[in-house]
Image (cartoon, rainbow, N blue to C red; front, side, top):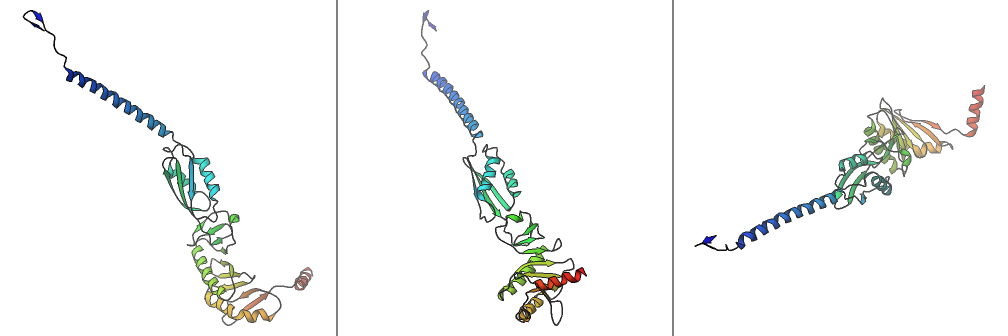
Amino acid sequence: MTKNGKTVATPINTAFWAGVVFFCFSVWFVCWLGYQIWLWSQDQQSAPIQQVKVYGDFSQIEAAGLNQKLQQQYLGNFFNLNVDQVQLFLQQQPWVAQAAVRKQWPDTLVVVVTEHKPVAVWNDHYLLNQQGQVFTAPVAELKQPLPKLQGPDGAEQDALTMFNQLNQMLQVHSHAATGLTVSARQAWQLNLAEGIQLTLGREDTAKRVQRFIDLYPVISKHKTQAVAEVDLRYDTGVAVRWVETPEQREQDDKVDRT
């Protein structure tokens, strides 16, 4: 700038340049912060699941074995893990009735399992729970013996209800039922722990079991042989079949050969 032919220096605008510096610093800081966030997110995307925790009240399921299966199948990226897939995998395992799965920050998979509680074997190959619902699990893996129920498809709940009712009656009198069969025509047979089969027919099953309870002390004293079957389908009495002695079986064999 000139004044009267002389050059005059313009004073430096300090506030302007301070603003420029602050703006540049702000831009740099935002870029740096964004880069750090990107690095953090990339690091988190590769965060692995380090452990699996399995909870539940188990009698058939081995928690350690289930835990090992989950670790082999699903130890991996924390964020990419699909808990619905884990839940589906669990519900396909034997003895698992229900499963809940969640991820626990920063590296844990938490699994809560509800186990099937079997109360009876159904048609030799299936199992019943307390509600009389059929489920599939290895019968050979049962930790304790269960009653064996037999019947047509759809009769599961009726069979379990009938078994429980009759078994309660018997237990009061020192008997115990181990199995029950219902036919397609709703005829019932009950097997007792002492090896006796009760043929009950289609009607008045509870009354007929009570008749057996009342008559058994007399029946058991009638012969030295053990009782094999009691047919209770008669209105006023019973028919009893006794366990054959070795001599009787030998005689029967001789008759068959003649």
